[in-house]
Length: 489
Image (cartoon, rainbow, N blue to C red; front, side, top):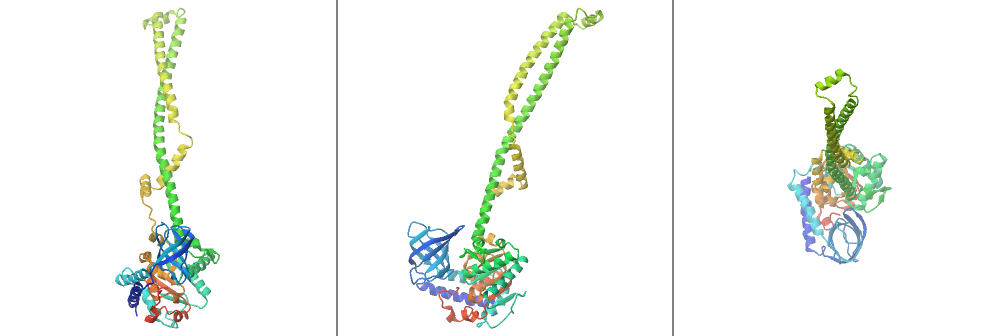
């Protein structure tokens, strides 16, 4: 059987199951639900919901919560459950506690979305890579798990199996594989049968990376909110996809706010310094005029002194000098006229000097620049130029912040989630990976395992206990094994 044959088979069976669930009472509202807020990360909230006795919901089941008060309903998914108590991840808060709420599960919608993904993989062969999935198909047809179709260990083949009875040893080998692939710049999708297993694997892998000297915070991302705070001494709550995205965009918003403040300060200082620069030019011009007027007054005062000296010594001047003065029209009478003229000119110049001094007194404070302003402006201008100029900065500030989950997840090197989330979450319909690692693969149903395999380009690694293949019965295509109300668990 090829991957396409298995996709067709499982899509048909999921559609049949979806019709059965729709016709039954499995999606009936569950009343009298109490809940309390366990934690919040970014825009996601984790609630512990207590259902009435006899009710239960499997992990990854989508649901809606309708509070009894006036709060708006919210949607979410079940991350874990034990008996009638479940942990649900919601997209909106319904308060610290709630009583009398109504929970509406959507198992039928979950099955329909999963079946549609398988149909899309068949209808859009160019959008998916079924080559690695074809190598997986014979393994999924094995009903006992005794067949070893691709060997064991960590070879470089398209399909690698890691069969080992010891769970801790298996995960150590997976951690070593993940490090090897990250160092070769591979993007890895890791799927687990449930969210507790996903948390445990994240902790083991992060610990191995830390021991290898790698920054696990940079590489590992747990797609859902973590149920545990620490695993293997590693704070895995920091590795949640939402926490990482929230921190990234919070820093981005902080950087953008800082840039906006710098740009606004630059715009504030630019006209101020331009105005002061113009006033400084005016001040320099008036000071130059004042200097010229003072020079003229000095020259006139020198002439007045010279004339007075000549008058005081006129009677004692030699005859020839007096005759030469008279020849050019200079005598006692004319010298007095010159003095009157010089005094008049000095008076006019002093009046102009007074006007210039008054203008200088006005311009000096207007042209004065505080000592810290110019260095601040120079620093801001240097930053503006480094970022591409004011036009580029305006474009950056005007651009809407795109908190795209798709864009962010494409920059993650190792993403850990459950296989059924990969199959049902629309985000995974648009992202692709290089390698798929299936942890505890025998406990992952064939349909979500195939859905995850269709997202990888190069390699699939299957890990688990070989005996669990027959024990779980999740890979068999017999109809009797497909009548569970939770076929993707």
